[in-house]
Length: 528
Image (cartoon, rainbow, N blue to C red; front, side):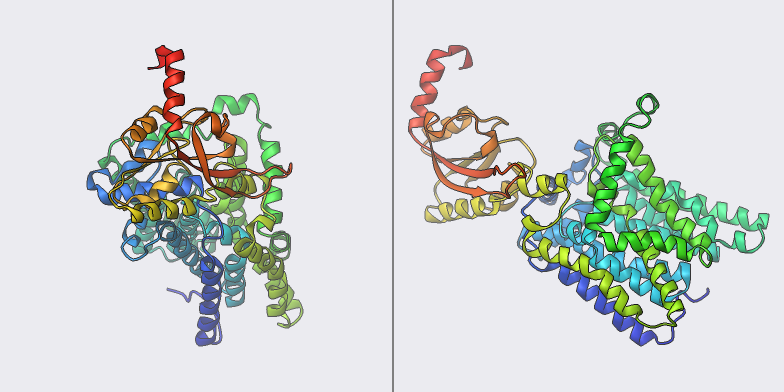
């Protein structure tokens, strides 16, 4: 096997790479709770807790059409990390570090240049795109990392024609398959690695091509074999059904081929400029131009891994957010590093490190805000709303959980019942992940729009239990005094663009709520 990277001093390169990984870990782990729990995070972590407690439910995410690998990996971390949210986010952090290491190896293998590989891994480490999502207990960081490693071993396969590399490629593809559905793009793009294969170098020898196709088949068979592990659990069919909620069918696309494509392209540009950020995005475009002559086939391969998924998703996606394209971002870092390598050659090797650091400054500036003052960071509109402003943001949930625990400690014999808005997501799942081990505490969802105290909470109050209600201010459609509830605490979220501000509200249900409920039922006997 040929050398992965040609470099003058392995020790120095190793030290630099470890320094980059250390920087990446710091950016991802420091002040890890600066962003409150997000709706999907709460769901995934709650699933993991239930799956850990009940072995027969290890395929629980399939009930909602979600693949379970992420949750499986969170489960063992519960044993060593007491905070469930940190345990979940730690999986994403480790995925990010694996993605950085994979990008280094991939760039080195493709371009045989350690400087490009190091700069690419540095950009991966500091890019706000990954710093933000690698700090969240979401599956997208893992999918992106698996994409990097799938491509790396796919490149190794076509360049070495080794069966073991084809098998490893298949296992990474399979792991991606049981992580998230867009992993299908990795398999569809597998043939693009022919661009850097021995078939090209050996003047298109038909025997070499046949060998490569057999190896691709091996990778595909292994990948689908891993996917079929999910058939061991019920609801495997739900994956295909739920995918339809996120994409338009072919008939719909043909009716409106430019809608939502045009709108999504504008969103993509905004995300790239804000989160890549603009400095790395601009130099990646320049990298295509400056690197085309020397790295034509390699650049073309990287562009296909960017443009293929982005074009298809922009054309068919019903739901489109920044994290859904995270797995397409890593090739940008390699292309940007190509630009720096070409400029370095022109300058006879001078100032490469200085230039790379200067380009990283905008990214580090945004990283600092994401870590310490996320409400002041330049997040795209939808991301700011979802993670910081709206009901999907879990601001105050940790504090409410602490309050409930303190109430339990005052009198462990009390039964505490907490009603929340919603039935899954930020509430009640976000509160349940913190209270699941607290005895005599029941957290349950009681509805979306809250205008009255739920009958089950009234029943608990009549039984002399301590009863609380947790609701976002936008979901409370009646005055508290008209419901018989008393405000205990309010936890304001980030200010919206229109100047308004939502808060998470914690109420205690009073005895007055029983009278109000009984009076309403007397007037509306059909409700009882």
